[in-house]
Amino acid sequence: MKKIIILFTIFLSTTAFSQEITIEKNHFLLEGKQISPKEVKALLASNTEALALFKSSRTKSSVGGFLLGFGGGLIIGDLVGGALADVKYPTGLTYVGLASIITSIPVLSGRTKKLNDALALYNEGLKKSATNNSNFELNIIANHSGYGLQFQF
Image 1 (cartoon, rainbow, N blue to C red):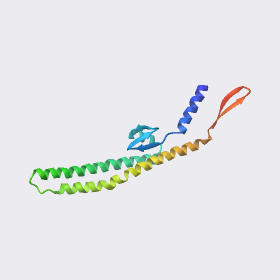
Image 2: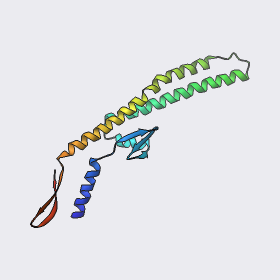
Image 3: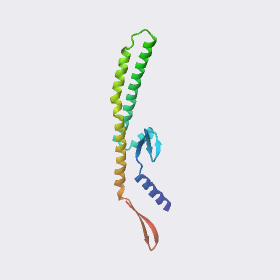
C-alpha cells in the first residue's frame, strides 16, 4: 500500500508541475529536450483553441513556402529559357512568379505570431490547471500508532 501511495504522490507532483513548451532557434523544447512538431500537436490536443492556432500556423507556413518556391522557380526557369533561346526575356512566367512571391509575403508574415499565440495559450492552460489542483494537500502526521502521510483532496 505504501508503494502505491508513493507512486500516486509522485505521479500527481509530475502532472501538477508540467513543463511548458518553448521555442529556441526554430526548435520546440519540452523540459530542455527537443520535440518534433508531431509531438507538439499531440500535446496541444488537450487545448482545442491552441491546436487550431498551431495548425493555422503550420498551414500558413506550408502555403507561403510553396508560393515562394513556385514563384522563384518560375522566374529562374524563365530567365534560363530566355538566356538559352532567342525569346524576349520577361515573359508571362516572370510576372506570374513575381506575383506569387509578392503573395507569399503576407501569407508568411503571420505564421510566427500564430505559433507563439498557440504556445502561450497552451502554457497558460497549464498554469491554470496547476492552480486549480490546489485542493490537494499532503501532510506528514504522527500519533500514538506511528508516523504517516495524510492526503486531502
